Length: 68
Image (tube, rainbow, N blue to C red; front, side, top):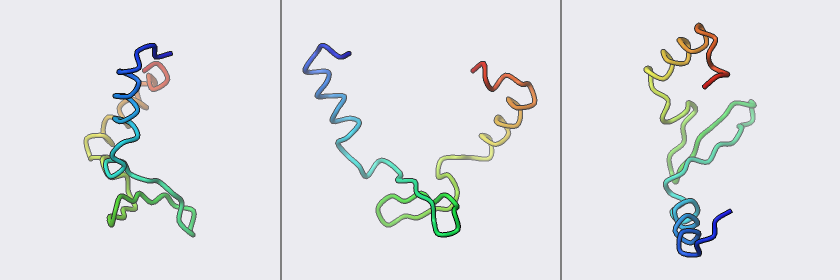
């Protein structure tokens, strides 16, 4: 629970203020995920880099994914 009105307003503006910062995720007609933001449309996660894929595989191989 947030007890500070000032902090609550700051947090609300930060999370809900500028919607252009966020990607909207929906499924297309084929059931695949699509990310859209303004005029941009992507079929792969926008901020998912090659390094992220390597770390994902490493975590799965180490069986520590559930412990993170």
